[in-house]
Each structure stands twice: as structure tokens, then as C-alpha cells.
Image (cartoon, rainbow over all chains, first blue to last red):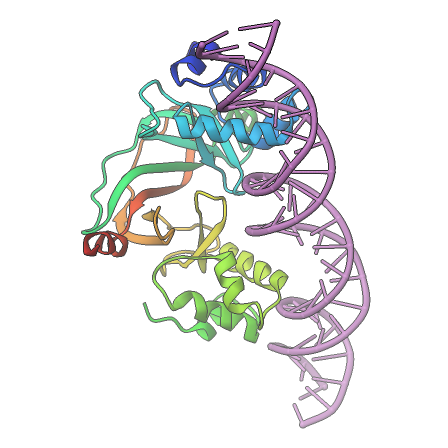
Amino acid sequence: MKINPVNILKEHSLKHTKQRVRVLEEIALDTVAISQPELEKKLGKEIDRVTLYRILNIYEDKGILHRIMDMNGTANYAICSSSCSEEHHHDEHVHFNCTSCSKIYCLDVTVPKMVMPHGFKAVSMNTTAYGICEKCNLLVKEN
Amino acid sequence: MKINPVNILKEHSLKHTKQRVRVLEEIALDTVAISQPELEKKLGKEIDRVTLYRILNIYEDKGILHRIMDMNGTANYAICSSSCSEEHHHDEHVHFNCTSCSKIYCLDVTVPKMVMPHGFKAVSMNTTAYGICEKCNLLVKEN
DNA sequence: CACAGTAATGCAATCAAATTGCATTTTTAT
DNA sequence: ATAAAAATGCAATTTGATTGCATTACTGTG
């Protein structure tokens, strides 16, 4: 996934600041989601904690990033597919949270449509599978 | 769902204390999941915060309660179906997190089997739908 | 039914994620 | 270039959760 931070900011009419660009760059480095604490570790010397929180919130609101909560209740972020917007997150793919390395993957697996009970109107879905990821499975086999 | 706290404790060879009984009683009151902060509000005068956390953790470990993270990263708890055990949570039903009243419902909707990519071994799944619940939908229509 | 050993509880302190208010700096439109 | 608006940085605070340790409560044994 080729990401151009400057274009993304323009598309969503967000002001171009070096902090905002850095956050996008950093998140775009990897296809797996990155947690707020990890981001803070990487960017903490360049960007203030609070600014980081604010940027992440804006990006989520605008549909630029989607947020996945891990089992510890910590926010993890990944770049949204291009079809996401401020009005609606098309985040209908399955996430995989490795219980060994704790990485969160955005899988190319679509969440099947599920019928809600009468009266319940679902707007979005979040599906997370917990287990052992490819890399950790390989590590186990090697030993 | 008829719950007998004393029996549940016995079945899992947990010591019978009034705090443990109270926690189960309180959670069994409602079919919707209850958050740690709500529980603390209700039980804070009878049970110490730390004890509450410890009891909830034990119950989750033993497969008595299951824990659902809401969008704020706060733990919510609901009584497990009878088939849950220490080894495995059979928590394969869909949760519904109302974005209006923020209640979390355990729906009688089964999470469909999803095929994981090669190398990824899923042990458990968590699916949460976000939207407006039955009660909140009715409230809107009335006004 | 007493009592000793073990486990659970309560309290104080601490950690960590996230948020708020406000002064300062940066961006952008003119 | 500059003025208005917005973003950033800093300090302080809130909130969910955890840890260590002294005290209290439970349970099995005699």
C-alpha cells in the first residue's frame, strides 16, 4: 500500500504539519497495526504525547486510520482502505491479534454479513481473531 | 439465565467469600454486560476496588465470565454460557455495543466460521457490532 | 468445634493510557 | 508580510488497572 502523507492531509483538508506527516509515515511503514505506546516510543522525541493523541483521534474521525482495541484495552492503529470516509469506516475485515507477539494484523478476510435481532441497527462491525500468527508459528517449529 | 453463585464457586473450586458471591449476583442481574466502572459504582462500598479487579480476573480465567472491551478500552463482563471452561472460552456469539447508551449486549447470533490465512491459527474470536440498540431506537421514534 | 495453614481481602502506592486547559508556535489565506 | 485561526507543547489531572504487604476470613483436619 503506497501512502503519500501530504496528499492524504490535503484530501481531508487537514493542515500540513510535520507532526502529522511523521505519524502517517510511521504508521504506513508496516501493514500490521501499531499501538499508541509503540508510536509514542518511536515518535516521543519528535512529537509530544498529547499531540500524538490528538493527531490519532483526528485521523480516526476523518477515516484515515482505523482503531483496533487489543485485549489490554490499548488503542492500535492501521491505515484505512481507501474507501473509508468521515461518515463511515469500511473496516469490515478481520483483525488477527497474536497472543504471542501481540501484533495486530489486518487480514484480507471479509467479515460475513450477520443478521441483527429485531430493533438492533448495526452501523459497523469489528471482528478480531486471537491466536498465533504466521511468524510466531514458524518460530515454534524451528525450536 | 438462572444463576446460583454458590454453585458456580463450588464447580470451579473457588473459595466461598461474600465478595465473590456479590460480584456474581450483580453481574447476573442483567443480560447486558456490565463495565468495571459500573460494577465499582455499585459495589464500591462493599468491596475494595482491588478485590473487585482480582475477582473479575479470576472469573475470566476460570471461564465464568467473559470480558468484552468496549470502544474506550474499558473491560465489560457478562456471564459465560455453560460450555465455557478454563481451557477455552466458547464466546463465539456476537456482541452489540450501543453507541448511544453504550450498553453491550450478548446477542444470540453465532459468529460464522472464517478461514484464516495460511500460518495463522485462530483460537478464539471476538465480534462486536456497533450501532443503536433496541431500546435507544424506540426512544428516538417516540420523540 | 477449635485452630492452624492457606488463601482472599483491604489499603496505600504506583503505573499507564488518555484527557483538559492554556500559553506559545505554526500554518494559511489575504 | 501579516493577521486570524488552528496546531502544538507543557503541566496537571483523570481514570482504569496493577503491585506489595499487612490483616482478615475461609476450610480442612483433628
